[in-house]
Amino acid sequence: MANELRPCPCDIGDRFDYGGRGQEVQVEHIKAYVSKPSTSTDKAVIVIHDIFGWELPNTRYIADMLTANGYVAILPDFFVGQEPWKPSNDWATFYDWVKSRDAGKIDKEVDVVMKYLKEHCGAKNIGVIGFCWGGAAVQHLMLKNTHLKTGVSLYGVIKFFDDKSSLLHPTFFIFAEKDEIVPLEQVTVLEQKLKQNTKVDYEVKIYPGQTHGFVHRKKENINPQDKPYIEEGRRDMINWLNKYM
Image (cartoon, rainbow, N blue to C red; front, side, top):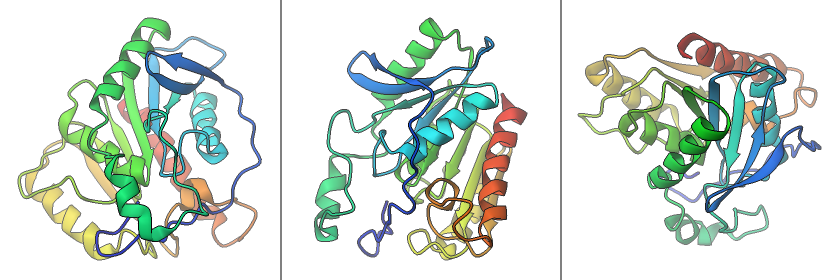
């Protein structure tokens, strides 16, 4: 996703060589990747992908990680058949590309996915996590959707909060100290607005030395200094979901 001041320098990072443990399903007009734990549960998490789409192995890896922690995880194609961004694309065309993929206009798809989770997966408690573009989508949903239990926004571009915005549900915000796409000045403004307006539980956490995408686009074994923060971010995400679901 992009800093509003300049085109997105978003790098796909370390593409995982990962096949996934779940299966692809058709949910009305949406394709989705679904992963279910071996024991029954009424807890489910909607995973919202970044600009690289629902088929990115890295994001499916995170969905399966949620399943390993006892959640039904569903990773829908929120671009609904439109092409995801490709690393080979020209960044000069990014703004035109993203105009038809608005992170604040996924409510119809979320309703369809929630209906599927309730009717086909036995879900009664549903949370949401999202990365980059999906992180912004989580922010939108935490301000608008009354049916979700909680959310985790990972390095989402901050654009849905005005001076009167108030979260409806407990929300955890993960940011990277050296994120060129979501600068710390924007994070500071977000914290000020949350402090003024929000009555539910929330947390904003900045991970030292990390760059955009670190929780799901970096391999733990590439840079040893990053490994503790990658693991911490994933652990914090799971702990937050466990606390509120």
